[in-house]
Length: 311
Image (cartoon, rainbow, N blue to C red; front, side):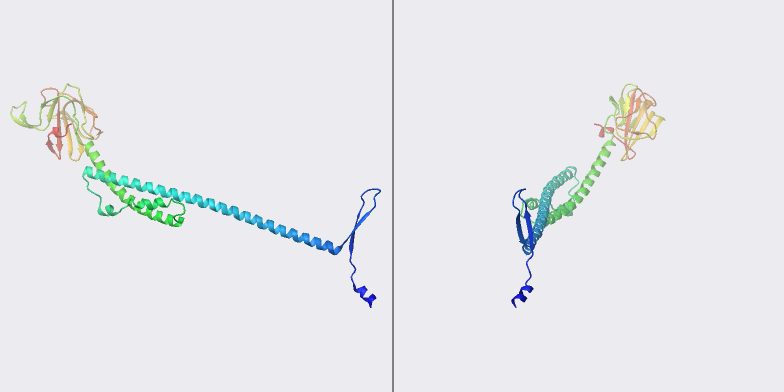
């Protein structure tokens, strides 16, 4: 029985390692069981697999950490941008207050009256600025809430700016019309000299009878440049009985000016002139007793005293 069981027992297998320390040294041997070697190799394989897994997990953690840091930096940049936008919005509101104040002052100065009531009721109040300033404090409000509040502020300011633009356009049109009216008003002397015959009734120099003088006579030397007293268009330029060589300008707004007794002309019909342009040279042509400029101002076809316009 004993011999039979011994056959069923598996013999252990060994691996022998032989070491030769030197030429004359004794050979040394080392026997290690194959099962031990397998156990060691399996253990080493487990260690390697575990190490590889740990390295993979470490790299993944590092990648996520870098991504998280990048997200934090991006959030910080966005937060700074939100804060800067809030400050810009506050500055924009202050500028709107200044513009609206200037608009009101200009309207009072020129007598245009206040803007319509809807504009006056559309406030952009000062206390709201404190709310925007709080948006710049770190940790006091969430970024989405801050953006929502600033969006509401911006929408309101856009409405105010649109109304303000309309009001300023009205002011611009008013001042442009006034500028045009001033440029078209004969406010300067055509020549500098002695007024020898004023506007109104006088004794006519040729008939000796009372006659209405429709302009003023300004005595100057022959050849004195005659200047356009305002911007206008030449509607007459030539010789006319009584006036001699004459020029007539149309300035718009129902205003016209006439210059008579010139020695020669410097403009043609249809020509545009600016205030101060030389339109002719004084003389003694037509019904004249001596060198002078006969100057008339007509409003809606009726003669008016030029002295009303002259500075």
